[in-house]
Image (spheres, one colour):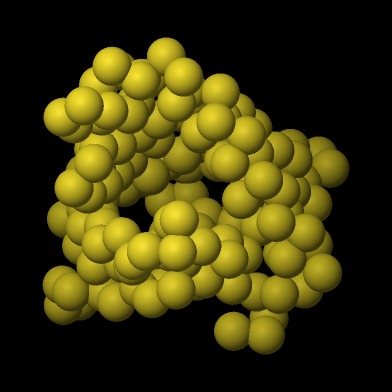
Amino acid sequence: MAQINGEVLIRRPAEEVFDFVADERNESMYNPAMVDVEKITEGPIGLGTRFAATMITNRRPLRIEIEYTGFDRPRSLTSMSCMAAADFAGTLTVTPEADGTHLRWSWQMRPKGALRLLAPLLEPVGARRERAVWARLRDFLEAGGAELR
């Protein structure tokens, strides 16, 4: 198992950051690898909401199923993401600060099959990728991207 943690300061209100991130369909606006996301459960986004997503990795589509296993608006969002090569469980924590919002992530990656042997090597790669994705989210929201939606 690999552990991936990090944080970013976003100069936007906590509720705005939480709501934007909680709607997984927004991820393609700040994550270039995410090419398609659809909400597959009915009703408002909350505990038990599920999404089906497609990412492009190594030029191949990767199907991901995401389920919200914890939902405490606007403080934390816990999810389980399942794909062929690995499962991810983790929490996003949103903390209001005087100068914006701290968004913290903590993921546990459980590689499947032969990838289990590479777990220690996947941790730094995953950490770099997550930092880049959340930095793009920060830049997008600080530029007023949420209002464009």
